[in-house]
Amino acid sequence: MNNRLIKQTRVPVSRCDKKGNMDLQGVFTLFMDMASEHAVEIGMGMDALLHKGLIWLAVKSKMKIHRMPQMFSHITATTWPAEPGRIRCDRLYKLEQGDELLIEGKTEWAMYEPATGKLRKMENGYPKDLQVHPEIVCEGPYARIKDDFEGCEIADTYTVKATDLDTSCHMNNVEYIKLVLGVFYSDVLAEMDIAEMEIAYKNQCYEGEQLTIRKKQIENGYDIGIFKADGTPGALARIVMR
Image (cartoon, rainbow, N blue to C red; front, side):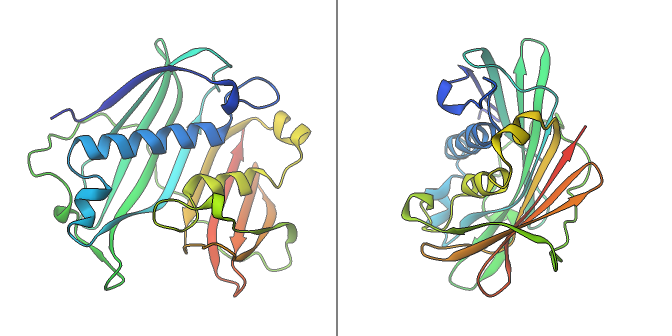
């Protein structure tokens, strides 16, 4: 069983920013697609879980950015699942160019049972014969981002559209990244030297929901909250700059 998925590719123009570098939405998309593909290969994909009445639920994602690759440059992307905990597990990622590590990341996943609304143990989905690849990247804990944005500016509002939905019919994980980065003007975003970006997915958002995006400045960066109409957070993000 191949416990890692490795892909060589070129940075497409469709995934580049105004400076000609790969954008963060593109990085999140690449890693998400590879995670889904590899999960199927090792017997823990969406279909395998659905037979057990379960779905994968992304809890948090974190990226450490050392350098963004340029348009049309050759890159190598790798993903693998880490050793699972009792009810949560990390999937790890890295993006390289030759021997240079460009980006390292991880996503925390849980197994969710829609019929009961409960999380289930990882042993229900991890293949028993999987030998976990031992390499660890993106070390350190996930940030604890508070949902207290009282008095913070409303940076944007958004209505969830049909084109935002994934196969579970709720807002796709990468669409939250677009909302987070979309609170900045393009000139500001182009000058931001982002070292880390994290997002915690709190509550699923569905087609037609009205979302409010609030932004507050923190030391060396920003916290951004995406809130549903009832005030509960859909997602909370943190951007840390060098």
